[in-house]
Length: 94
Length: 496
Image 1 (cartoon, rainbow over the protein chains, first blue to last red):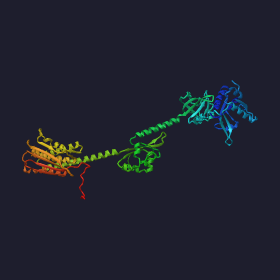
Image 2: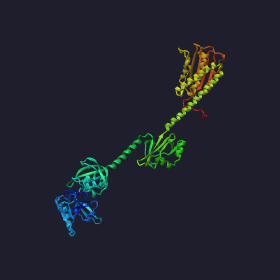
Image 3: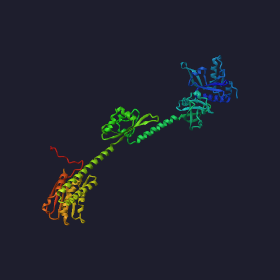
Image 4: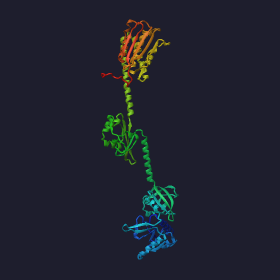
């Protein structure tokens, strides 16, 4: 369920690799801080189903895809640089 | 970290370049590669802490990794099973949201209990253990959740099993537990001893083939074929049927068969407990008692018959009622003396010297010079005691009335010996002297007849009465009963 101005974010990870772990933690932190109540995160573990990577041509892990709002945006890495994530997802910092 | 807009028209090589840069900068630690026909696969790059990952994933307990603020970063398959949610629904949630009520406080290496929500609704007791762990540069907490309900149930089952085993071990009788199909699942030590073969796994009939003891039991057991007997024992109560076990070694034993079905809390039959209680000793005691009662009856009848005979004879030979009364009373006394002595020795037998002492007690003078008694120890068997007592009493009565015991100067000497040999014989001599001159017709009267009859008939012996004028001399000779089990060898067949 997303609101009209909500963010739909999909994070592709590989099980418990350090960067995967870090990406999840960081993403959640960023969303809580800058998009409270306006986001939906989906974590997709490619270790469980690598085929899911084909749909959006994921090669690097972790990769974050912003589905909503459009257009699609992609960020590669563990999302530890908050500023760059905000810019990349086009989020105005609160 | 690099960033890029996804533009469908952008050349692919830009993605590739991006990926390479990301690897170069160390921004990622896994990539997806196409391996020909196998399809896409995730390849972990160096430093991805593979062993730890495998461990957590393989754990039979539920496990998750939580970030510093409690965000779930990773869950293993078992945790998905426990919560009823797929990993996508769990990763990204807060750890506390998994629990019903108070979430557990996570202290390193400390175990606590909490209530995990299953499907968001049901509460399941879990044990919680955690420890901090660094993954790359992120400080995380590894949390392990163990399903207590299963463990508790397994512990309860294990405890019940241990209890059942210890009960069986303590049982002194044969006890077996049957499953509903009549097969033995547990057996006490005594049951294992009695069984035809190792009982666990067999049907009851295979381990304990039965023969009904009495007609009542035969009726009850005969109603069932072997197969249905096993099922009956497993499902119906069965009380107090006396049975014997088939087989040579059980020939002397008897058992009481009892079966009580077991019902679980859903009123379903889950088997039964069957006991075989050893009646052998009890039956032996019963038999012994029955024998004793029969023996007592026999003896009482004997005594009554003797008394009757003595009364009849005494009447015949008594000239007056008063005489009858005295004589009869005297003879009864002799019987009573014998009876008392026998009862004291439980009817095993009485020493001849003791019998003599009892019979002659009324005639002992204070200075003890009149009487002399000597001879080797000789145990008179029970059946010889009464006749001997009567014979001695007759002789004593005669001695008192007419013989050595009628005057103060009279002397009575009694001695006996046992001859050696294959058939040992007792020879007892009753010698009176110093009394009044013995009359010529002293031989008449019942007393001497009774003596001869008693010794001859009851003791299988011979009597010699010599009415010597100087004093009566009575000689009794009768075979000594050999002790039980040491019978004299029969001299039968002609020697070669």
